[in-house]
Image (cartoon, rainbow, N blue to C red; front, top):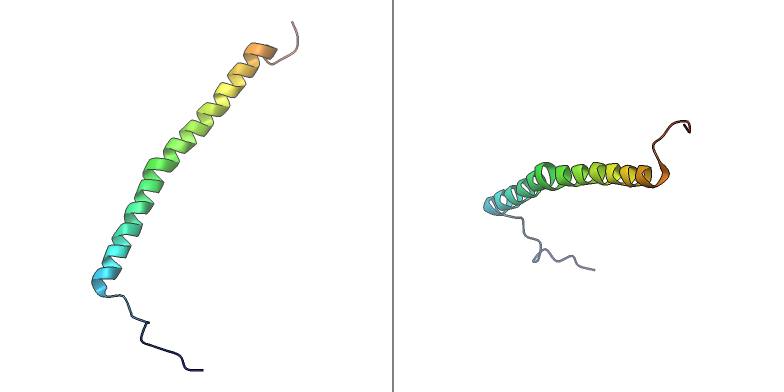
Length: 64
């Protein structure tokens, strides 16, 4: 069985730079854009659920 080396090409320096720039852009969008928005939405959604539950069931604590 022969291994062909015709299809194996090493990426050029410009290809590596473009890939690195693309990955860094994706990382920064996720790290400083999408994840903070999702974190605030999750905490806000939980707070909204607690608020709605307290409207229906009453405030926490012993019955007055």
